[in-house]
Image 1 (cartoon, rainbow, N blue to C red):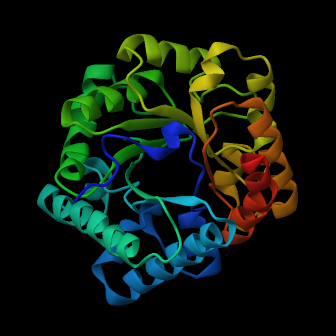
Image 2: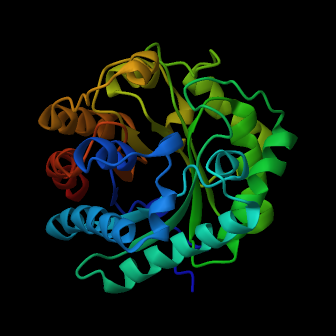
Length: 316
């Protein structure tokens, strides 16, 4: 059963750690081949489930050590219709896998020791390439597309849905509208280029404000993900009221641009301690920042450094 669908603890200021760069960890640290950058097929094999379990448990242990809650994000970023077709999965396959992903996380939550609260999120990715707004959808088209995966999550123990690495306001609006109809709290994570603008050129603040206007301010909160803090710090510094709606950060370890990351053959893990200091500074800028994790290039070392720098500040 769902535990927090009607009252997300992070929206009341409870600090939640979350995981890091799942796909880059699996590729560069575990030596896996992930076609289409998709982790969800691992749920189909015992070895894959063990790798995922180890990954999540390693991160949850950091939350236990620091006395925080945890946000379990499903490994379903690519488990939507178009990406599933690339991997040979039919909609009925994807429905089963998305439901199984939440069941997998429910088992992890039940087995968690000393970590409370543990919130389960159905993770959604962009219909196209998150680094390029190459699938130009209207908000109604985005709503119709993402409603399918969101509907599968609504039938499970998922407490919420989180859409990350979105590059257009229209897709963010579609996700929020679909989630509202399904009765699930929705979080939208926009990604930005090195200039603090979405890949389609929209300034970050304007993206949040336009999404709010088109959805009646019904998102649970917003996130910034898949960019180094250096890429969006100035946008935050110049921000105003919309800053209160930023509730989560999942930054990259690398300062490389999206284009450079696409071409990179080696992992740029950056500096975990430096990233931890960056997050502490971001917490001073964002009054409602409550979900802290990583994205491309980060692993448990970065999350631990973030917790070390930010948890004392949260308790002060």
